[in-house]
Amino acid sequence: MAVLGLNGVIGTGIFFLPGKTTELLGPASVICFLISAILCALLVLCFAEAGSRFQGTGGPMLYTRAAFGDVPGYMVGWITWIVRITSWGALANGFVVVSDAVFPGAEAFRTAILAGLFLALALLNIVGVTLGARVTAFFTGAKLIPIVVFIAIGLFHVDASRFSPFAPHGFSNIGAGTLIILYAFVGFEVLTVPAGEMRNPQRSIPRSLALIMGLVTVVYLGIWAVCTGTLDGLAGSENPVAESAATFLGPLGGRLVSVGILLSVLGINAGSALVAPRCLYALAQEGYLPRFLGRVHPGRKTPVVAIVVTAVLAFLLAWSGSYVELAVISVIGRFAQYIPTCLAVPVLRVKDAGRPPGFRMPFGPTVPIASVILCVWLLAESEPASLFWGLVGLLSGLVLYLPYRMFKR
Image (cartoon, rainbow, N blue to C red; front, side, top):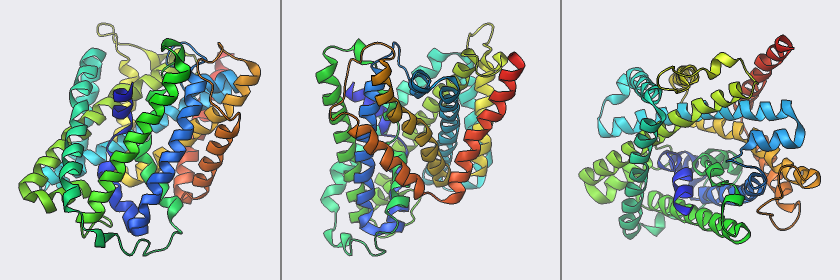
């Protein structure tokens, strides 16, 4: 479980975002890492208890529907798909950024690279889910190799003087910085394997969650420390890990780390291409959206319509937005999953919905309430434009859902 959790959480964000938070806060950006770690630790506890009440892998849509009804459940399911395609758009932009580091000048062919990436991954998943899953698994380990090399060698080259002054720009941008770096921590939803399928969930779930979030936090702090302690131009850097590696490993070492990052980012894109269309497919299968969106290929039995629709929309988002913009919008959209799940926990306790929980978090409603407060604070710190696009994504689901439900009736 710990290995699966690490693979689900450690993604592209940690490769590209330290430069953006340093630009806002300087070395004080480490506070953003700590706040993100605390918030995610609280959220995974809520997801663990909610998920342990239901068969299968569950999910925010399932928990919300059981607690609050069909329409809220659909809205959470819809925003889950919106978040997936927005996140995929961000990941695709990250692929272009690191491609330019490995193949200088690739940025000039950005549109062609994006189109080729989405076309190849869509066709791969139309051919079959097994092939798509194998490609994703092949690249999964690649993300850990450059991280281990980078931290293990880089820590010996850290210059402590680079951490002073600690907060050259003050602390007013803590919220904005946390919103950015939180994208590196999200993905913990994969940790919510139903507790009923595990041995002694009361002991194993808390221990696994603590181990995973602890390891992720240590790894991320290690990357932050090496980047901050070795790279003069960290603030605003789009590819700080590769640039930092070049300072102590030389141009060839930096290029090798960039290749490892490129393979990692490609694998994470492949994972998004596998998962994102299934969210739309599930909504159609549940009867929330027209059935044609859930049609499968007659021979391959893959959700071909959902794959094509998802890939086209994700491409348009990637083409029209930047990595950081899409990452922040993706995080804001995730709050529409996290907040209902946290609120569902005490409601499900009262309703005793589903089966008795295999895992029950301590401290009563304190953890869900604290989680919601942190989420609301971060939403309040968001840029109006990001909130606007998050709201547009949420309301667009109602535009499709309400007429369709009326037509069905």
